[in-house]
Image 1 (tube, one colour):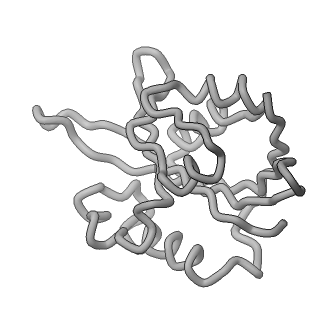
Image 2: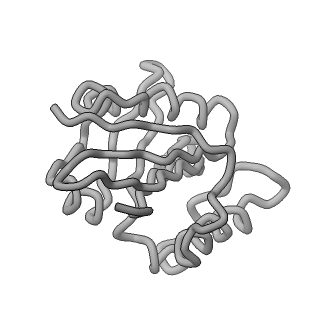
Length: 156
């Protein structure tokens, strides 16, 4: 088991690289009227620069849980772990994190969450974790809430 340290931050740090800030600003622009943006607005074309950085956690209301629908290739490569099809509870067990509780907060509040996540590997690394709520629908047009979860290397 690896251990990760999470520190909640109220906003992106001033020294956040432009590419990461542009990702968050793209989400903000799609969140018209302060609502949760629709995945139709946040299309593959619009998110193209960050597709390899975005994991999608789908909310399952009857279980008050999530399932990882897409596991970001960049984080799978960096961690050597894939959680595709798993609950974030497994990530919490493996890394000592609070992913599940934080994701519930994002869903309940319909607001983003930001963390600095530290991880000891060959050296101490820090990542920015950004959680952004989005909405979509199933084939029958029933609403589905999801969270885009992205990790960006911050410093090592």
